[in-house]
Length: 304
Image 1 (cartoon, helix red, strand yellow):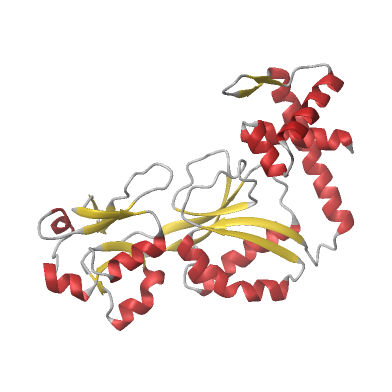
Image 2 (image 1 turned 60 degrees about the vertical axis):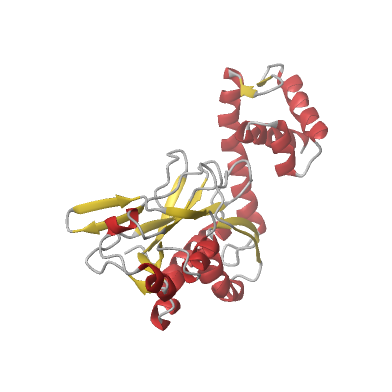
């Protein structure tokens, strides 16, 4: 058992790049985790990691050992899953992180159905628009909207989102109705920007018409990094917004928001469930992937 714990401690240091983060993810004191790794190196009589005051690096021997370690740990988890649990009744805990709007408007309202189907699965659901590091935060899945930039991750496409550009009647009464996307770069119009929590980059407004594609920065006095705040800003008349249509379907129907630029459209943006290739895909993970895809499809957000 001590060997397995040592191997898991070493693997978490490699994955997180830090003894502190690895200890936090395993709910261990840093000193305890450090002793586990030191004991592993002493038993193997080889240095697996190099440590400086700023950085932890994997040695050549450590990299080779990590690859073989992950294969063994994954196999052990697969054995445990097969021996301990009836695969028709998956159980256990899932740590999932989803975007604010998809979590609050789509998944949480439907979670009672998931619990009815799989009463033995517990879910720790992080709901935010901040960037999540799967390894550092020890998350099973993250739900991401848009292209997945990290080629080292496994991405399962489970849906797509249609966007719309709109403004409140109060905004249009005060500033007039913009007739073309380019009007958003000119007085008197204002756009509300949405920026990445990770990079601080403000995403441009994107429009399509036939083969034509236009990106607009817009004149802005307000940028936000939370989806609910972005919806609230549009409803408050603070500027033109470009957001997921499903999130404001009721407001569009009631006239609280008015769609703009009918000659232009917005290409659908894919939605992915993303997980680490080193993580064993358990029965509970498989049924959750299937349920998310099914739930998005029911809301008209399916991948096709």
